[in-house]
Image (cartoon, rainbow, N blue to C red; front, side, top):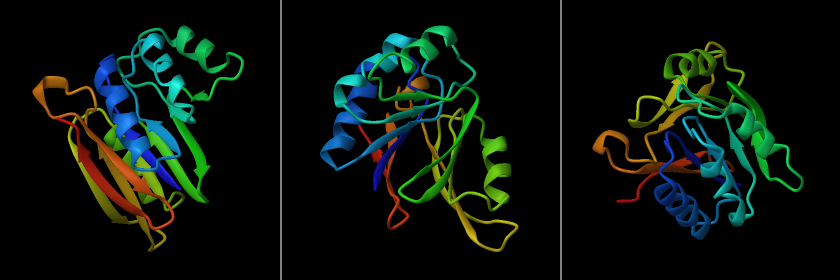
Length: 170
């Protein structure tokens, strides 16, 4: 199963949609958004891609009620979890949270195969040895919204192979 991991769109709808469209061409089957979506209208723009969207909020929360309402509307493929999320995709245990320090702590528990975060706007992919002696991938996809003049980035992950590729849009 291939997934698109992105974060910190900060209502940059054109770049968010460009990332999802690019990842869909590459075979993605689901999207993880690690926070700082801000407005429900931004997340709503992903519905035409007809993909499951797993999203949390960050420190720029915007309209939490509107985001929750959007996720609970009929036929919505948007799953909006709140502060963090624990889910299984492609038989992999995944944890999503906005803050890197919280993400690193969760990765080190060994309870997850993949832990994703955002907030810093800097992309990285790390393979950490956890307290169980196994490996957990900790990744931050940077900022898909090109915040602060940084490049618009996301991560394409193949959960079957546990292979990760950083993608720069522009």
